[in-house]
Length: 386
Picture 1 (cartoon, rainbow, N blue to C red):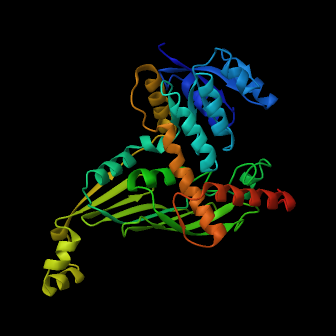
Picture 2 (cartoon, rainbow, N blue to C red):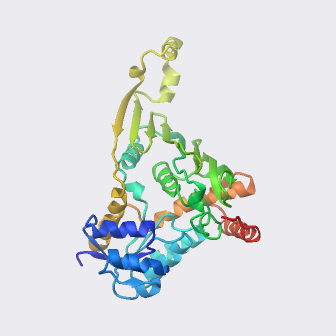
Picture 3 (cartoon, rainbow, N blue to C red):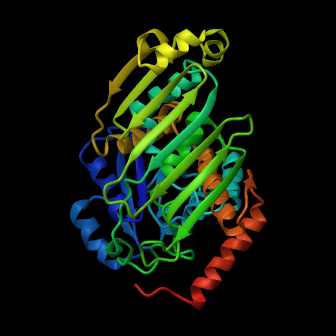
């Protein structure tokens, strides 16, 4: 097998984009094996653009057709685990979209089943992990160049979505259809990157607004305080109503600091001696010189690196890597089992907000699901008109 035949489940914006990348030859070790969508209008579009790919309106039939070696799940979040399991059961490789699911209990079922099929490739579309900027940041942290982390701050409010975005379809921004708002739709990449680079927090305390600036039932404004359990703390802020948007990620360590601006520029400041040593050894004369703005170059070295990112390149990189793992065992950049971490993070933020208190990770999975089901029932009783 020289190319992996990919079955695309869901021919919406994401699924059609993946099919386009593959058809254009941007994923040289992959071809479109088949396309599936329950919307009959998608059949004509898919047939026009990809005439050689058979079209199915039932994903089980596609999985069992013999036309695909692997599938990708470009469908609403609740469906990712069940479709992933169905593919693996049929000995078909599975690439799930982010998030891996809505709640950890269902994602754990997917992970545990995948463990029984080690011969199959199980991946997740965390395309930001292929971003050279974040790979560099992770390398710096992992190498200990800025020392032990003391604080993380990420404000990511570049997810502006107008009301019309939510009004496109009834399932959007609902507890029953989507399982949440910005935390499960737009920000899963940042939640994954934050835990991938800095580790999972041990506790979270969140202030979350639901339908704050949009006529929706789910969250459009999130502020969360993180406790890493070793003295380090953090803040994570995201929303969908800031049309001017900010993307700034800071990691403070005892030997330096990393600042990422707009996911394009990273500034690394490496202290010439750890802050604790400076505190212990500096005279007040030395300190006064710092306060007067003298000699910052004596304290740290500064490196600034700018990166360019072409839209789609990160997605194609994940597709190539996934196919390479199928074909020759190349290690996965984003193993499917990693998907549970970001879901656990989002679940903890929601649960803290619902209970009005700090919660520990991992959260009680049964409690989370019970509270989520309460939200779904409330939504059914008082639906928001779109």
